[in-house]
Length: 277
Image (cartoon, rainbow, N blue to C red; front, top):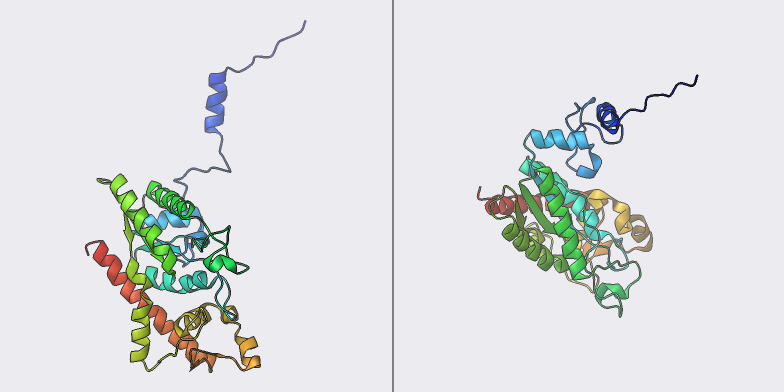
């Protein structure tokens, strides 16, 4: 006599599935099994490290916008993104309660077709203004959903500023009464102030026709000297910018660190002012 096997009901199957561990989507409350690394960059952290940093009070997130564009004959197209690697770490550590979002590397750089502005040069990547703003809205909304209460927008390029300002105003109106607020910080992009500060340090430039200057080059050299083609320029006798010698490299890198510190100090003061602190 054949025996029929009992088939579990859908309700029982659901209970089994609910009880089974999910290796892809673990319990968000799972304890972190190892020590955390010392980094402020979210993309370098595990989700557990981000969660625990937020529990420890790091509920401010900095969203930097850079760009990929032509920067004269000596600088890598990711100039702004390299600079932000240095400045954002300094800003986050000075704030003490902040993490840094992955850099928004793609921003408006001119019309794509027909090409205008930086898009006239190979290697540039441009977004339409609407795409750029939509991207910022979604990034901000993601961090709000995770519980970040202060979302800071800074940009290392002039063409980034209007979009960030508009997105901050839009989201603050939409989220009025909630716990999260977006802060657009135009003071970060104050290269005139940086230039004045450099003159006070004895560095006076004679502007050339390159999309480059001493402050930019020095900051990039702190992060990675290859991005300013240091060795190639030394070999060609062109290791200078705007009338300022960049040799010895160690001296320029040290000045780059001071520029980063100066910019971070100014930016932190502006962030705290925006937060009412």
